[in-house]
Image (cartoon, rainbow, N blue to C red):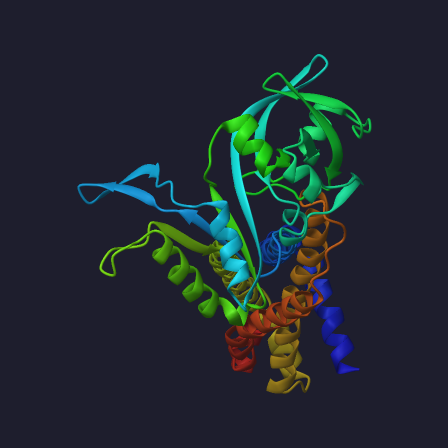
Length: 399
């Protein structure tokens, strides 16, 4: 019964000073809402990165020519050092490299009737579909026979499909690339944005790209799929051994190529987002501490305003523990009410701002209640002790 009486007194005190109570509750609520927003943003970002990582293909290494150097200074020009035959050699002579895919790409204009779009045209092999974890929406990927015959066929990324055809099916239609006809045989499922949109691309057979479109014999990069992440070191050793031998690189010289995990950039972004989230979290927690200081200030003012009430309660038999409990209860309720408002506001703001469905970080909601209760407890200790330890006679004389 004493607990319910203290809770009733706490709400009566809040009601007696509405403006002051609203300001304190707002400070706590903003802090909690900020924490939940940061957690929700982190969850959404994590989902997007995981989705993008999955779309890149599992355990895929990217081999690219290294940059040339002039007088020891790196230039922006890549060394022309990779060939299709080397991609075949890597998979033929390795136990850990399960597939390789050569690539060459360039920016070209594509046209369908009166619609034009500038995009990236990628020459590759049929294995690209599986190594890079592509998913077809309609049609098919080009096959080995079309690769051998240098056929003018193409597969459209989602962005190119939308720009040229809108909602129409492009299968069986003919588009123009640099004035030449290409038959559309398939469309790919959208992968989403990254540092370079994977959807704004047109895929054609590598032989067609090399001999009919770009007039080159080398490739721009090679994707190498390995059995598992544990085979990375062995795969890297085999790649370096094969390519350094083929390129006749002196033991003392550096590689004229570079090997990188295809998810390297996203992993870096993931780490950066995590650090940024931690920094924002610290700021949000600081705002909660400020809210706790506000609660302590309100409780000190409340003690000063209610000195005579404290004296009367002590005179009619209330013990120090009763006064202490009363003011501690008021302080904790202030913290918890601020937490409830912050949780409601944070969830509502996340729903409006992020738009990824209802995100309820239950773990952090529980943490928020504990944080608010803890702040309320800590903020109320000194004012409660000050109230409980006041002299009864002096309290009764206080005007």
